[in-house]
Length: 299
Ligand SMILES: Nc1ncnc2c1ncn2[C@@H]1O[C@H](COP(=O)(O)OP(=O)(O)OP(=O)(O)O)[C@@H](O)[C@H]1O
Ligand SMILES: [Mg+2]
Image (tube, rainbow, N blue to C red):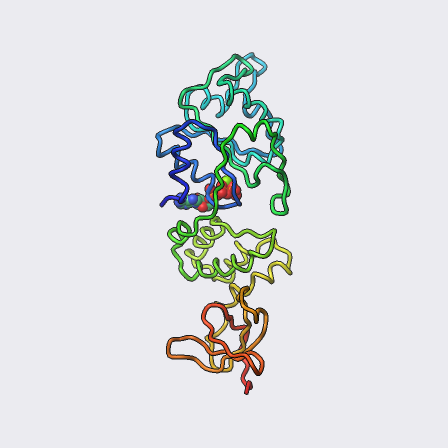
């Protein structure tokens, strides 16, 4: 199953334009590059960029015996294939200057010799930011050198929810993910990507309870108050069945009664709940009301 932008990426790769894939964590950027290389029958070399990455990791070096030590980049540049420069914004921007001339002039001075790029050399980079430096979510990220940024055509890789739905084999988990994502949308530092979804599926498959899985892949490492915002997404599935008199809270962010507590006054044949909130409001609830506990003695 392909991401909705997969064909665009493939065509751009065939065109031979260096591409920068930008997008939030876990939307499938790296995977899409693997798929393109496979589809086009190109060898794939890659380098995951980090704080410790140096020019040597890209250009190679001459060892003590005078022998050139090659790199994945050199192999792709000289012999052809796709080179994936993963998480380009996580490293020192100066390191990337090493490849600038290779991109624009078609040759690079490696430590041993000058090499011209192979006709099938293709460069694809990925980044979580637009190369504009750290945001709230991606604190370790550096500003990309403008000269470098300018050499790439940018394709913004968004989460493809249809692809996710196709890959997520547990429909209950997918609903929890959707609810959690809705709740997360107002919180800047939160992003629930496809990686979280698919990790969850694996953990559920081996029989871990859904609450445990939720903690392991969704609220992991979050401050308690932020985790609390997401908790209703899982609580919905761990509470007992809704009965007349069950207490509920409106969690639909669009609803004017958001956050208000009410109780189930009737259950319709259709399975929808009739809710009373205060003395005046009555509403019909489906998805957006979540049980927070049952109260025996309401009215
Ligand atoms: N088309 C696809 N088919 C099957 N699995 C996919 C597909 N696209 C992505 N995935 C899976 O989704 C998860 C996240 O994808 P990936 O690691 O490529 O995201 P990313 O955007 O590179 O994230 P990050 O920015 O954190 O590096 C991985 O487990 C990957 O295998
Ligand atoms: Mg990646």
